[in-house]
Image 1 (tube, rainbow, N blue to C red):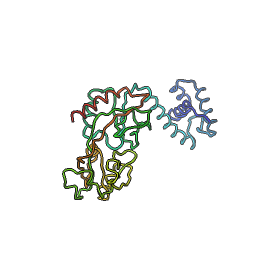
Image 2 (cartoon, helix red, strand yellow):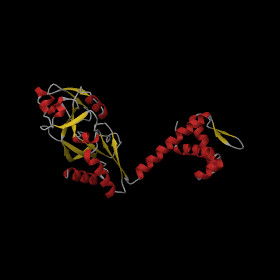
Image 3 (tube, helix red, strand yellow):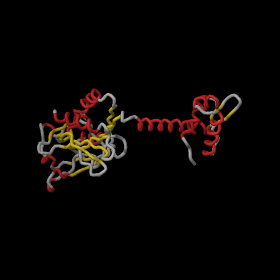
Image 4 (cartoon, rainbow, N blue to C red):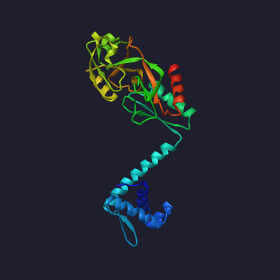
Length: 284
């Protein structure tokens, strides 16, 4: 069974206009062509979609359901065409946990000033490629290397590592902590997209771990005091949370922030995004 977009457009036009004649005018075809197209759709579906009298055309019960689906399908098809033919006037940048920390707002504002022809959208997708592999974005901000050869990436900046712990934790009164202070604690990690693994510690001093899969869940558990976490500075900026304190980890290496894109189909704005982000991170 094959259903074509032209058949769905014909059905919706008949229902919206009320007559075959008016639908033909809207579609720019003959009335006979409208009748043939509707008949072919009804044959393909094996159901009657419209009731016709000398005065009006009304959908059957099944026809009403088909029309509702047809409107959604046609809207998606129109969006697909707009996306494919827009000349890259839209730019979607994905991220997993935190976008660009304190640089997020300056980046958005400077992009709008310098590139008003390209609409910028930041999209949170908690996947290893921050939505790039899923087609949810055109570029992605990631904080660990992408091993897949289909992607390229470049480091645009560095972020310090912070410990997240409950506000009533005894360590919360300090100005900073060391990796050794995690001894005896349970570290809450996101193995899919997080920036922290136990490999930061020597083999004989690695903390116990529990897993989470979302930044909000991560913060909720940490606020209870059951676990502690380690994350990039950007998370603290984007997700301040009552009951959670962020402290610098003095002896932990910084996290590299990367911009990633499809190797064989980079977005035309990739270079401009890279230059702007690098400038923002360089100036602090």
